Every structure is written in C-alpha cells, then in structure tokens.
Length: 135
Image (cartoon, rainbow, N blue to C red; front, top):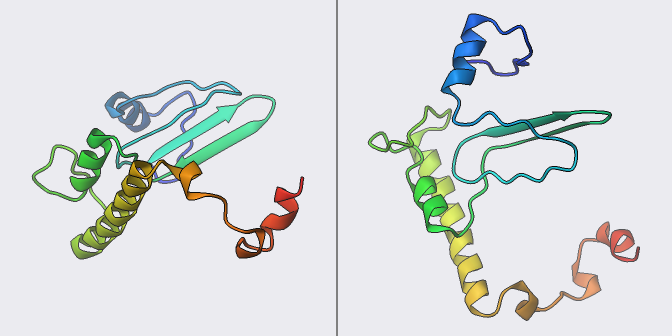
C-alpha cells in the first residue's frame, strides 16, 4: 500500500495502522548488524551522521524453518501467504532455482564447506576483481 512512502512522524492514520500490523519495527544504529530470513520483503534505514539504507526481498539460509517459509511462498493455503506481483508459475520457477542452489550449498557443506573447495586461479576470476584482490 505504501510503495516508496517514507514513514516519518507525525504519522497519518493509515501509516500508523501499517506500523501496528508490522511483524517487527526495530531501531538500528550505525554499526548494527542485522539479518532477515524467510521470504518477505525487508527494508532498513539508519539515519545518523551518515545515511545507510538496505533493502532486499529475502535471504534464505539452510535453516529448516527458512526453507519451509520459502516453500510456502505463494501458497494460498499457507499462513505465510502474501500477495505477490509474480504469477504462480513464475514463482514456482524461482523457488525451484533457489532450491537447486540450496541443495548445491548443502552438498558443498557436506564436503567440508567453501574452504575445502579451494580458491579459483586468479585468471578464472572476473578481471575487475584483480585490483580488489591485490590490495
């Protein structure tokens, strides 16, 4: 309902009601670290001497509850169901792709994790990484 709306006091009635319905409203400070899991959109704004903003759709870890929440995305019978702008078949394709990546990550962990895979040769990395890696 609020799209690009900036919530700032004094709040109109509709904004006040939206904040009351929010799962969490948390104040972050400079230097705070936060991690959102699941399958819902999130946004953070930290206003201080410097402005820091972060927004993204979701992060899905290998935690069973996160995977379960992902699998409920778009399911009209799920308590986690939310309106989405994607068609059901598109949502299913995205979920299938994500599940493939999660399975790849789980397999990598069973083989000892990222450190056991080793570091790719410098020539196989994107050229723009070279200066960053040489610092």
